[in-house]
Length: 146
Image (cartoon, rainbow, N blue to C red; front, side):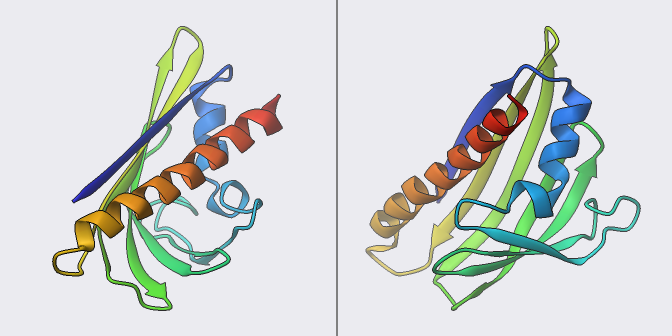
């Protein structure tokens, strides 16, 4: 199994950063990505039950938010990939922690490549690519907020 963990600290309030990151369409659009909400969440538009579609240059992800704690945490799972890939997504999640007036964002994702024998090696390369995308999204938000 591949495990990704990237983090970033922001000089903004926890509520503001959570609102920015959990606004899926805004946070996951730009830099070669586009995101649209296919289904709104039950209580919060971007919360539990929300389904988002993220389009990159090579693949389209359909993801569902299945855990949501306002200003603290949300988790998602990839429902489908187009074109279909041998990737089994276990869980992705973001945790938000306030530290001395700043906000720490921790982004995790666990997955495996389901190709026998070489899946682990391929997964290692995929992990590096996904980690770069996660870091770019977090850095882009930091730049945008000034």
